[in-house]
Length: 309
Image (cartoon, rainbow, N blue to C red; front, side, top):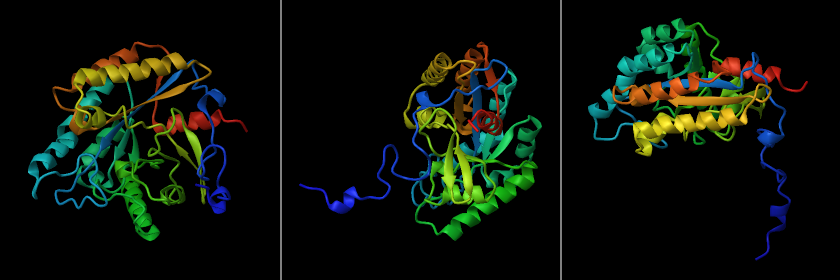
């Protein structure tokens, strides 16, 4: 069966990616990045502070953590709420033992419902990044551009006011985007997004408003994926974090840095019987020299400073 002539004349057909969001490049062929002070690993810890409405519509799909049973699903609602009431403070304590900072990916609804939690993050020197309005307002291709713009604007306005920070980063609820999401984020003053999971390092993306940047925020090493979705044990989670770090550490050097991103959900890893796994992984990482605990904005700024003019 022969191909249509039009197929071969597809205007974006090229080596690498057949779209214009970013230039194709292989990581080993890129210039090395120096984090400074002899550091080789930028450790980026991203707890997600989420709010799941009790009356979720779950459209166009159910995100991880959505309500499961008939309304009112108090069992799952209160478990998710546990993360913001209890679990997050165990994470804060675990990070505090090693002087580690974080970037809290926060639903705007959390800032409205838990202003003391915003203050607790800011007082610890954590960065606040936007995680959309709440976990029932997903960004997707079926939305109008105006509808999505309103969600972006409302989310950023609430979080910027509540935190007093510029809120430079964005993680879409469930990592779900529309075709226009990067454009709308850049137009709203966002510098980096965390939805694309195809690299170990930041990279530049094209939007109609200029450059935005993708940050490495892997989903397969996240606690909800490993412990809830894949049903692995807490020891498995600890070992996978350690394995992830050890390989990145081996691949890196002072003039060729890497990012080690750890995505956490307080309603998952913040449970009493699970927090040990995180504490042991962090202790392993902290024993190594050349580990720089940084926020997403700090990592992005260092990466940009190392790019060719």
